[in-house]
Image (cartoon, rainbow, N blue to C red; front, side):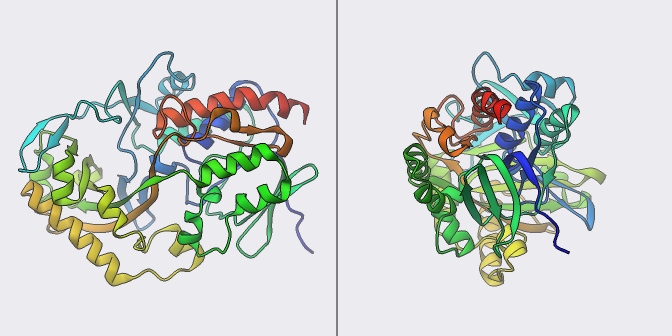
Length: 398
């Protein structure tokens, strides 16, 4: 006997900072309707994710954002309950810079990530989103459906039907929110080999001019990729790394051009192990967009066969550049590759007035929404709180 697909008042696609913040903000406002978050990864986090391993419990690498910053007052309302719950703490690590001659210097003053008040997840970056989901769960059940790829968005007379890769129905919802741009952007065709862009198809069928405008703006939004090398060093090989005077190292423009690296972060792990996360420059990532890593969603959810030699070549190139730039050895390190296809969106971003399309019962939040904090966690939090304010009256009437 077939199992009936679930129905919810609100479905949120993406459990990064934007999606999790929207869930928390709505619950904080007192909305107790049914809600579900669908996430392609194994857990919450998005670009505030932490790489873990079932076979290595000591591994915990923040392989996206190493920290987040708040640049203006008033701060996002969700920050205080996250602080109070111990989900976030001030970032205390030293920040330095590297020039094209390999000389260390002070932090780059105009780096958008390092201005204002600096925060990090506690004890790991994915606790930003875990904390937001915990806030939501305090008020009402808010399930996270992880490891789920939404392939088709189908507008109905009273909401949306979300379907998977084989056309199977995942759930029905009265309202839908996209907290990321993947299903609206042509890059999904490159990443997954699809022959269409799900939101473009839905927008065309809907006839909703506002949704079509939002879809066109999201599809045209440029973004910068990043190829990230993740290194896990055993305790007996981590001594020189542990002694570095910085925990986040920014490469200036000339250094990025010379070595193909944007920044490096150092992270302490259990049993005196150390993690090193090497974020590539935009130019390096652009030259290697087809190399996504054997542990990526494309490989694990779609059964795509990664290019083992190409993956090894990219890791070798970043590894060599790292050692040349810093004069430190990575001998004995376990290596992984993480490719972010759109780690850094470029402006102007989606206009806030297009972030809610009532006629089609769909909304948008995340760091791609224009405004304060665009392209950063701050923007994701602020856009989610704004959308919650606008969306809640409609949900209350649903």
